[in-house]
Length: 550
Ligand SMILES: [Zn+2]
Image 1: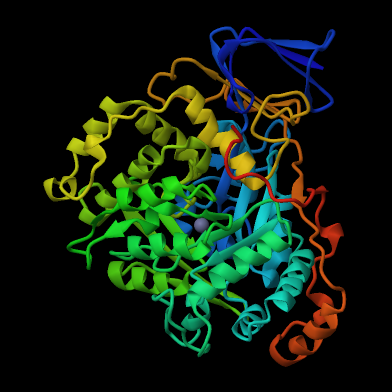
Image 2: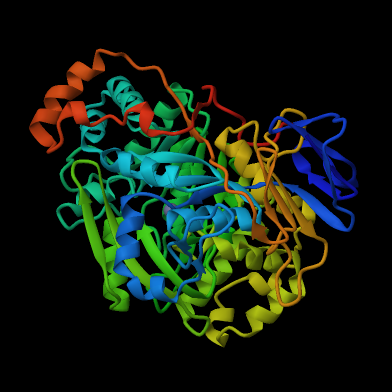
């Protein structure tokens, strides 16, 4: 039992905005009252629900590939030594599993959504998620280039595709589905891409990216998944791609979807030399499409590692930068590319990218529909989120950064014209309450009775030389104090959220012979046994509201 007293509580899901009130905890949950137990005096501090990362890359084959590709980063990274139950680990751009848990918790974030899992390597992902301490997790299955599903969509067999997708979700033990560059990753197996939403792509004479998007969005709704289709649109990173993004909103035709890392999809111009921000052209239609949520995928200047299933984009990025490049093919299902990258403030394209992420966060009016992410580690590392918060909350600080950009870059962005400053309550929405709601995790993102007791307590003033929200004084995970005075003091084990959609069990008889034809793995070895997940928790089906009810 525990009581937090004297702190200013920010709990926007329950309409609490900076009110000094007690937060009581028993048996890992928020309760209305406790007698006895420990008291935390939070006088002079702010009490927030633990952060929820809607889109990050922290576990699985792609991460391991990236860790191996950049040993120089690993050597330079912050080291975590053994201590107070802690295992040794390495931080940096692609932290090891243990360090990932320590770094998220050390910043006050307690739930993470790993956004890209191929069925074929789901076992690996779950093994790494096991080893990621403290935080609760969910993960999303890569589905928009799965050849069995694409064959069915091309044949117009959407109902059978729904049963296959339901079975694959069960087989991989995941929480939802992700579409990366629909059709483009499948076409990449022939060295091609899928740049036009309404045109067929290599290997599929009749299927288009638009039909994959609408088909999967329909399937997600029919399966009643709590999180909508998680969509990485076509033409990521390419000048002029804002038109594809806006057209994708139309293709969704009112169906629920989450548009991932929107920053990478809001560029104008017809080439790198003319690239400019089109954040307003994306934010305006987004504002009226209340069926959609998004995350920023903001860019921060400095080192990053790009990791994505979007193989053709990674090859292009390698050609543009000359940096080392890794490409993985995941048979029949997806691909993966890795390119280390440095975002430079003197670089025109990078400066525009940096501005676009912030512009979208400022131009999208409803904070319940846009979430703070960097598409870690693609736009920057998750442990730099407090820098973005500072840029959102302080217009003078922001404009000072804009003035440092090259003159040519300043003319291609609108950031200097935006005077909006986020309130503390809005920060609680974009870092916790909003993503929890979009993920359909009703016990997360708020401090009402019955919620998981995931709480971050921050000083009201930033520490010397740091940012507000960099160093919580206390972090509680499921009611246990895991961080005290900026140090991890207890290492707990998080849960893993999964769903179990309904499907026709006869679908196995359809899939089994296809396996014998096209997979190197045997059908029996393909599904992940539930025993591989140490603390699975099944979340009820039923689509949740994308926006906050009035
Ligand atoms: Zn991503």
